[in-house]
Image (cartoon, rainbow, N blue to C red; front, side, top):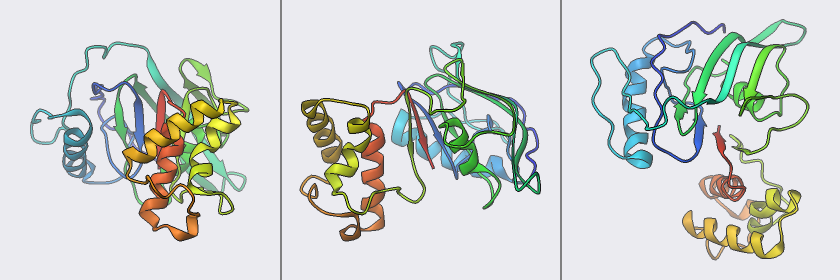
Amino acid sequence: VHPRPVPDERRACPRKVTVAVSHCVSSSFLGNCRGEYNVGRRVRASWGRMLTGPWRSAAPGRAEIMLSPNAGAEPAIVAEGVSKLFLDGTVVAFHQLSLAVKRDEIMCVVGPSGCGKTTLLRSIAGLTDVSSGKLLVHGKPVAGRPPDGVAMVFQHFGLLPWKTVYDNAAFGLAMAGASHAQIRERVAHYLELVGLTGFERHYPYQLSGGMQQRVGLVRALAMNPSILLMD
């Protein structure tokens, strides 16, 4: 599915972390679904109350926006004419996609199954190479390795079944070479935050789907990322 342009009405939200979430909508995404503004108004209002406080009402046909004090800062994520093709061009995930996500902004994207939402997030995370175009994170090209300061919460959890809740949550920090004391402090803090204290020794098969997703969220938050991608 080839995305079509949407009027550029990007605004930043007052947060310390840049967040990109699939299955929702923002006018900063080059959308491909009819009626996306109606969906966006409902979803972004909900996220606004949960994460950033009240959102101001928008005129009919326009997405809600909230100005941030540093709205003019350099974008955290920039895509310029980015395309991703599979099977020698037979399958087009997205084509000539251009967007800019500003620092401290919450951007949500929406679209039907197979339209490229997950592929876009994986490309930003450096897990999937784009076919053409330029993709920048914090001003540096994404190529060959995941960019610094980026963490991702996967759609299908991505937990290691042979590791406990604690070890799964600590996996990113352990791979980054964090000290045992730092790992214990961060993992304990975020497990408590998501309501999983007491489940540290459980394995993924012993958890519900929602609990497994929260473990994936803790794993990402424990890295203290500047960009959080949530699929």
